[in-house]
Image (cartoon, rainbow, N blue to C red):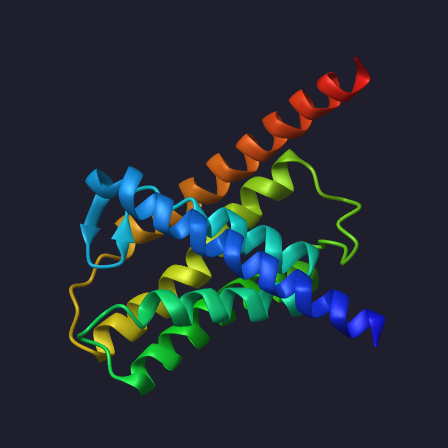
Length: 177
């Protein structure tokens, strides 16, 4: 019971953080928007990558739920399309994680995560998210923007990861004092 409650609360917290980052990205980086749902810099892609790598089950549920809430604001999407969009958004990171483990040699416990692997993961996560989204967008008649979305997701992953690294370094220095 305690374990299930902890997992549920973790998922809810992760969903809230992802929602906040996505809305923040929408407002702060609106100038980088190329087409509906496509930005040259998309920081939530980095958070989605972290979620899929560190807590795959809760992360996938959090990504699905946050995307469901975000996509529901789009009046051009029916209820079914909102659910499809959320499923696609959640599927990309977990598929990229699976490919990284099976074909790139990433260990599930992330013990071999290094700079080279992070660069490959950012590109891979960007690719899977972009390919799935662009296929979805094409199916509903939205403008194609594969290159800019892939760059935005990949850049978002890298910027997010390096910001996270900077925060942990600062936190480590601060807690030593």
